[in-house]
Image (cartoon, rainbow, N blue to C red; front, side, top):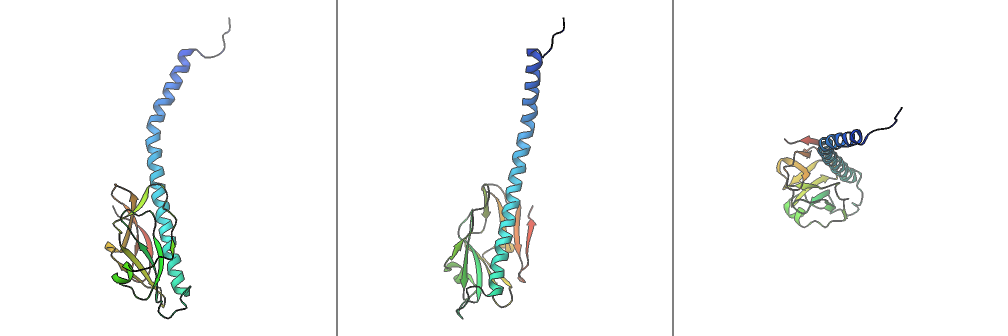
Length: 167
């Protein structure tokens, strides 16, 4: 007699094997997704900083002689977005009194800007140089809320913007 097919024991064995393998793969995939969200947030922040710098260099919206800087302001701790503004000076008082003209998109996933409350990055209309206010090490730290931020975006005084690994 020729029996074709699988027995119930064989099917249960295969299903349990798939379940065990899945339990090992899902946490790894979850970490991969979290890392990709952080990398995407890093690229978004770098792109927005470059846009603000290009607005400064091209003089967009600076018809008034009192506008000398374009800037990016991080308003709160664990912020998921930030604002863009124009200013006459690049200092702490200009940062705190800046009127936000446009807000960025929210960062992907649960990624937030860490240790950046009240920080501003100013770009000079004359040459694109950067002045960073209230931002330790001139680095915007990115990571999930409640977790030590290990990636960031660094801005130097010459206006160079680059992604960095902090830890």
